[in-house]
Every structure is written in structure tokens, then in C-alpha cells.
Image 1 (tube, rainbow, N blue to C red):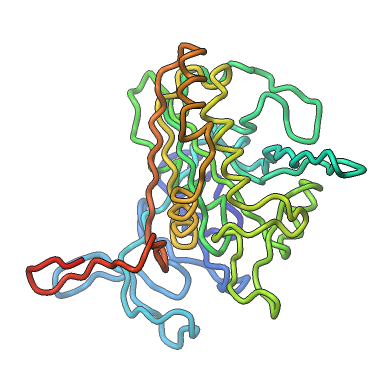
Image 2: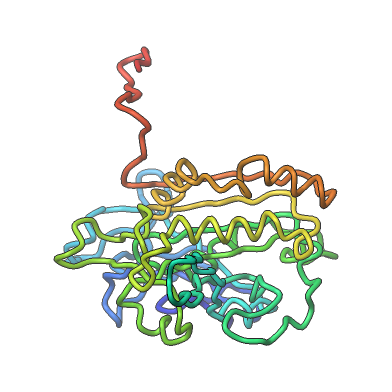
Amino acid sequence: GGICPDKATCCPSGSPGISGCISSKSKDPPDGHGQCCDAHTGCAYGYSCHVDPADGTSVCTLNPNPPDYLNAPQTPRYDMCRIPPDMATQVRQFQGFPIAAPQDEHRQYQPKNFTLGYYSSMGSITTVNAGTATSEEDPSKFASIETILVVIHGSGRNADDYLCAGISLIPEPPKQQRPQESVLVIAPKFAADVDHYERSLQPNLLYWADRGLDVPIGHTWRYGASAMNNRDVTSYDAMDKLMEYLVTSSNVFPNLRRIVLAGHSAGGQFVHRWTLLSSSPHIWNDERQQHQQQEQQHDIEIRAIVANPRSYCYLDGRRILFQETKQQF
């Protein structure tokens, strides 16, 4: 078999060295597992593989006496994600992207730099690993990358699951080309105060308040809150820095043509709000264009995809309503 993200259920995929992976929810019990249906699909914890007798559709049905947080009697089958064997080492490494602290000439001392946690289909995305002086073995390893997919996790902060799903979205390449030769997948992790393991891996890891009596709205990273260990850096600042690096590092990504930023659930809220509120001149405005002209670099397309957010960010009081066949504003 192959590897799967932590807490995921591993299923046989029919391919040597590759497992199909079923994601878990943060509320699932430690011994809770999904159910493998076939080489491609499965059901989450609390559900069983079933075929609807009415139309023959393959579905998942809720088990008897389910926990309170599971209430849908029937769901579609889960398309399992897969991690190719040649990515196994890179995807398991929890990386740190350096976030420089804002400089303030009035301070007696300057704050230390912090890191934004992430997983990647190709290991570290910087030429020097954050927190060390170890250079990458092959600084030109991104030379063939044309597309970067950045996937933002939901409230469960299971960035490794989202990396697995993102890798599985890459279309099957020609036999003579591996998929990672043209597509890089990055899954940032906006860590919470309770993520002690990740914080032990990256001592200066930025983290945000998640829940508590003093947190009126949970998962504070999704609406641009300041990090708990560095009030000068918000989650939107961290995303700005990551995107600025991807857009302007033509020496690292010389053939980059597009960046797709996709978020699901709480991640969808984050992507929607960040896209509307980010004002980084390096990403959106003339400074980016000037940089590309100076470097004789082609324009980089940036696309944002928002999936299943609990709420949307509206710019004013207007809403779109659908009444019969007439669309009203």
C-alpha cells in the first residue's frame, strides 16, 4: 500500500504502492474509520457503502445510532484521493514559509521572523528552508512548473488532506511526463493555538485563536485576524506574503503561467474575503506588471475558486434574489 494523511482511512486502490484515502472529520473519534467501497470510492466515518435500489446509484447511508453531528441520511460516495509513490517523502514534510516581521524604527528591538506552515507536493518551495541554512538540493526543480494550485483547508485545519485532494485533481499526464513536472500543489496550514505538534516542528510558527470564551467567532484566521504570537501579522498578511513570493520569484518559477487559489468551507470564506480585501501591489497592481516587464516575464493569471462557504462577503446591502423566472437586485 501507499501513504495517506494523518487520521485518514487507507484503502486498497488496485495500484502497487498507492492507497486510496478517505478523510476524517475533527469530531470523529480516534478509533473512527471510513469504509472502503471499491478501488476508487469510499464512505466517511458513520456511513456504509450502499446501492440505492431506486436507481442503482452508489451512495453512502447513515449507520444506526450515529453521533449527533452526522444527520444526512444519505450522501454521495467519496472519491478517494491518492498520493503517487514518488511524492511520498515530500508530502509528509511540514514546511515553514518565512514571514518577515514588519520593521519599526521606533522599537528598541526588531521582532523575530515567523513562519506560515504548509505542505507541498514538492517539498520546500523556498531556495533555503525556513529556520535552517540548508539549501535545496536542486534549486532549478521548479523550472518546469506552469501552474501552482494553492488549496486552503476548512475549519478542521487538515491541510494534509487538502494537499492529497489537490494532488488528485491533477489530470493524468502523458506517459512520458510526470504530473508534478508542470503542476505544484501547496496547502497552507493556518495553525491554531491547540496545534501543539505542528508548533513543536516549527518553533516560530504563526498560529491563531480557534475557540474559547474570549473568541466570539471561531476559526479567527478565516476573517483576517492577527496571529496570537505576532499581533503585527494577520492571516491575510501571511497569504499576501506567500502569493507575492510565488508571483515575483521568476528565478524560482521561470515558466509559471497561472496560480489557482481554491478554498473549501471555512477556506472558501477565507479565499473570498482575502481576494476582495488584499491590496498587495506586488500581486494586483502596477508594481507586479513593472516587475514582469523588467524580468521579461509573461503575465501570470491568478484565479480564485470559492467552494461551499458558510457565508459570503458582500460589499454593500444589495443581494441577488431569485423569484420565479425574474432575477431581482
